[in-house]
Image 1 (cartoon, rainbow, N blue to C red):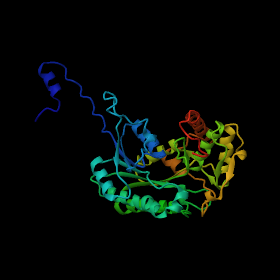
Image 2: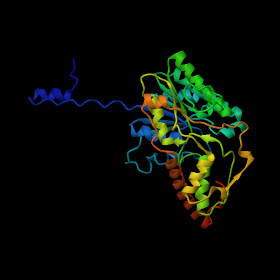
Image 3: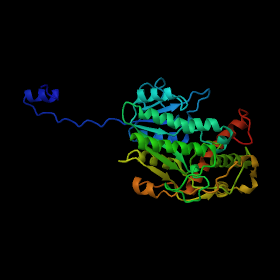
Image 4: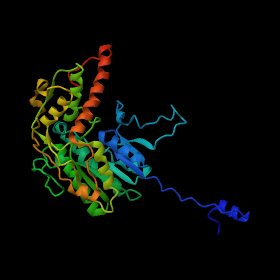
Length: 372
């Protein structure tokens, strides 16, 4: 039988001390993220890279580049060939195309799949309900089926939403009945139950994360929290005077997206799959968010906010407040960033962004807009 360590065998023959074999490094874990270019996708990518993962992301083909949230992680091998390249790769695929999903899984062979992709804007879902259902609900089913048929066992995370609880009174936990109040929320409920069904029917390690509202400086600018902090920055530097909003009495449980992606990862590290509510367990109204954001910048929100009925939903969700007892107990997870710190983080970022924007406006390179 051949010796397992040729160098050690040669040392023995020469009468020298045998080399001590070094333990093999554990193989690098591979993760696949849908929705990688979004807020959560970028924070999750940072987290997984920091833990030594090889990360692959699925992106849709677009005429415009939409990878800005990943720019700080991307390395162009042509620009600096000698620089180490982070293990991050992007692939074209779409949740509306089953064949692209199966090809991606066959070529990447991930250990973990995080399904973060969706048509995720509640108000827009009333305008494009068919598309919302096809991507957010049926898209999750297509991906689950691809995971089921994959050549290796894969752990699967499905991104749920507190909007699924809808009109069910708070606090909302894993045992709270769903009562969705939008096409988006209804589609997320379908994706949730598809995930449960595949776990029970096929034995998949599949988890649902029912995440309450989570924000950051990377939040899309058409979501109310970021719309507010962008307006604060632009008003502060003189680029804008008014911001138009809808229902100010709606209450939400707002946390920091960077904290919440850690809970996603923790779910897939457990011995058994399960479903978890992730929340701060504090609730604040849109008006309270306005007071915190404008007040931090030394402004009075009442001087700048105009109510526009077009921003009211056909069916409102009045109050969401999570009970994350299970996640705190089993995952040992808890939020690190509080409400005021989150607001200040977003306002600081958007004031700096507005200052840069004003330089371009003053130089005539950009026309000021009423709202971004």
